[in-house]
Length: 228
Image (cartoon, rainbow, N blue to C red; front, top):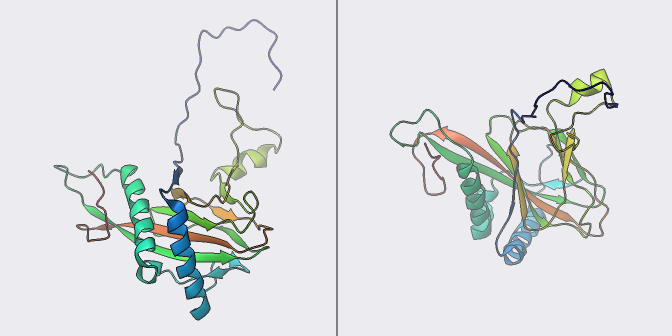
């Protein structure tokens, strides 16, 4: 908008960023060795399993029980997901510091050849969702994970050329893109719409998707209790 030329009568103002959507981006330790084991296990599973169709277009989508067939490497990844989500989730109704929920994990693998993608979707009945990258398929920038601003239609319905800016003058984007860097985990609220654009690398893109649900009750061996 054009700057006003009349004398300002504002003594002070600030921009408050309210109702944030928390996105957790983490790099997993010793990712190269972990990814080698994950890749071997996933490709072996793909040889004996037809896979299922969900949001995937052209790519292979395993069943959601990878925690059972993925071995120690998959369990380690699940523990990392639960640890991160536990640090950023609080049960405000807990009394005496006693946790009332445990975390339950579903996870599956995606093998995406060049041109494969995932349609925009959300994950109902979950609390957090995450994507972990095993192999970028030889295309480190293409085929990003795309997260959509849930308020996206509002401004576009008024004027496609107007965007809000923050205190530093940066645009408030309606989309956020994350490159498929091996060893990177991106975690977001499960209600957030997301999708994956096609990549054009010479190899298969391999990633793992994880859903975390909070269930009432004490934690079991692979569940990390939420802090009160």
